[in-house]
Length: 176
Image 1 (cartoon, rainbow, N blue to C red):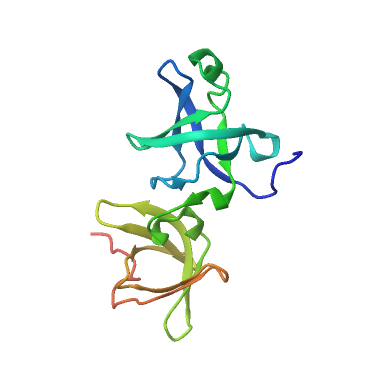
Image 2: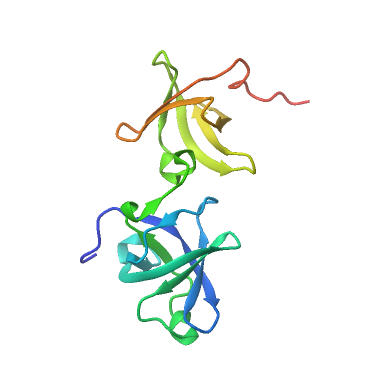
């Protein structure tokens, strides 16, 4: 792994070249497009273990994907050698305008205002209105609206969130 940090975030996969100047389209692993502090260090590879360092010069959102420009890659031919590899970044290079949509929220434990455990966030979806968390509690899964009215507090250090539930929110759907 060389000079690679021990923990990277997989952003997505470089799926194809874009234009003739060496840009690549990155299909994101998550629906939410992060803000990236480019230029920044990045890694490319088929897995984090075998990723090699590169310099991400610039990126921009485009049709739900990212268009990435890498230092030293200025032709379509040079970019073609990077297709099908995953793009990894340091967590410090990524930010999300809404903390409820940060994919790092997966794994947070949810608690009631009284401190009672509610469940664990196991998934994240972005709807037209707001983020929705998939929460697992025992063998039950349910959807939780990730909005300030229900999310009272996020604790990134403890990877916990205090949430407010209403009657019926955690009830399983009945088959009709």
